[in-house]
Amino acid sequence: MKVLGLKNNFLAIDKEYSNYKDSQIVILSAPLEKTVSYGKGTFLGPKEIIKASHYVEFYDEEQSRELCFEKGICTLEEINLKKLSVEKSIDKIYKEVLKHIDAGKFVVTLGGEHSLSTAPIKAHHDKYENLSILQIDAHSDLRESYEGSKFSHASIMARVAEFNSNIVQVGIRAQCKDEAEFRKQHQIKTFYSREIKLGMYGINWQELVSSNLKENVYITFDVDGFDPSFLPATGTPEPGGLFWDETMNLLKIIGMDRNIVGFDVVELAPSKYSKSSNFIAAKLVYKILNYAFIDK
Image (cartoon, rainbow, N blue to C red; front, side, top):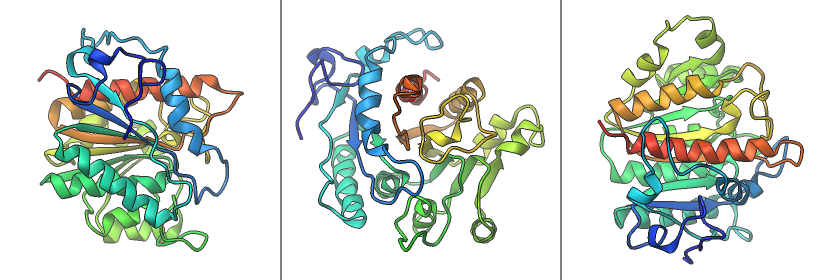
């Protein structure tokens, strides 16, 4: 795939730090949008995240480092999924992610609707033993099928549970009865947003989340996990969500306690009324990278 240059790559960094050979990190854009059921526009998410990233500072004040120059971040052109079904799109994304993992890269996948996340999660599952999936989301996404499709964005975690049920959910505040029963049957640990805010998991709830994860962690981050007053540009916003500092504290603790092996950021639906949402998503990507490569 084509490597994107300074004007079009993540963070707008020079070739010295963004070529494939020398970069430890690879950014893959998967603009899949086939099963959205409310707000649309997630196919524009990857492009707008990368565009907004040009205004994210290289220097991370928490880590006192410029990770992009230490590790290198290579941004590849978007995966072409226009003429493919959801199932074939997922297979194509899976093969692409696996190829880069095999090349020794840390892979970040940008979406697109959440259904695509089955692909990078499966690729990392196939390469890493003792793997947990941390799902940050407003919705459980555990329906067997939705609107006639078992590959729907509302069924992504049910598909993941077919090969790995080591799932820890954070920020959930919308699910149907069948999803609640599925979660219990498969012993999926769920930290509901309301219960977090009421202090039902204690003041150190982030530590509790981390303790439920295995050695290796893949993060699938649906941006509707954030409260819509903070990040409104998403397809299915739900009130009562997470905010920045509590979420970054969670990710930092996981980075210190566990081994983050890859992640995706999905469900940004860019809107002219909320340009800040694009920037927040771009900042989120860079923050997770800093936590994934945190000095322990």
